[in-house]
Length: 175
Image (cartoon, rainbow, N blue to C red; front, side):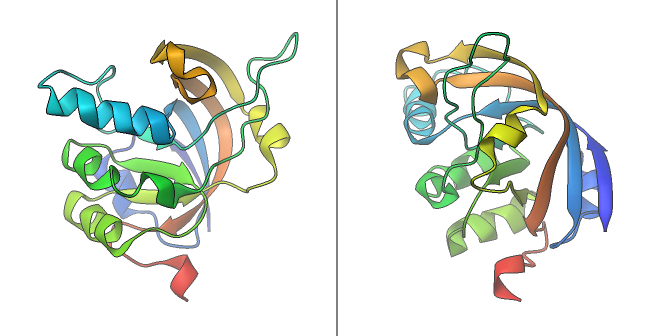
């Protein structure tokens, strides 16, 4: 089933989505890869606040290539999600609702998704140049020293994703 969703995610929206659904996201998403996730957890361990309010937000596991002249962002394909698995349960506990990436997730992440009513979307790997067309605005908001792995706030329109793991733990990879 195809659905159009306006971000940020709500629990009601998440409940309506099921593994295998094709979804087009419009709204704000945040990019963060391995190094940014590590730094976010270190920030929390130091008793400090994250650089953005993660509640109800969607994080795209992305490290874009540099933008060419006239572009908002360079190639914007997903990275392998399992590299964020050791950090993800903590962020879900803090209210993060959505994740966009590629590949399988650990049992701990899936359990945390069920507990926290989260959802995991996959973007098509290898289609970064096409996906970048759906990103209409992009700005670095934190950890600029990480280069491509800095946290970006991005506005997307009709960004195509597939629900891989829904909030009940149904997993498209295990069908």
